[in-house]
Length: 194
Image (cartoon, one colour):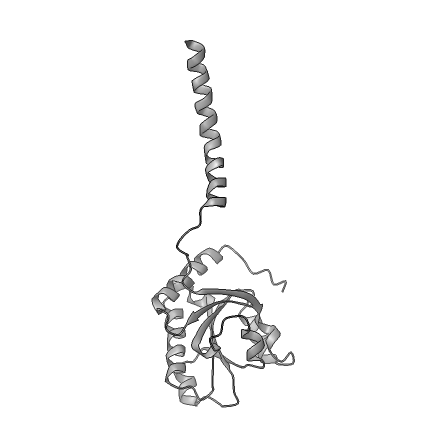
């Protein structure tokens, strides 16, 4: 009777040690989560600087200044209509909503034509960096069939375009996505070896 009891104890200890491993393998291979953590659509990462004129000091300056920062990015005409102004407003508000972490978030407006934005508009959204987009089709190929003007984009601290949000997206959910990314990436330091 004593031997059966000691064997039972041994088997219980063995089961307790093996069960987490077996559960993890089973979940990995046979369980698919039915809800994603992120609200935006992930896109194949594309290095942002590759799509601009290499002689442009402005691009190099922006990429140097934004190292280690997340960038909220829009594409639109320099004649910025009401939808464009709405996107610029949301970029500003989402950044401000990050509180103490807002210094880790930058805003970029890629102008896809030769029009020059008005001084009034630039004053209203000061702090937003302006760049002329050289090859819109190349940069946004493979994102989906939606024109880039109908999206907001997120660029990671290494300069890669990596997430897309429709302009009809809920800005509060975008704000939460960015807050999570800022929290998780806080431990990752930019090494400057791009």
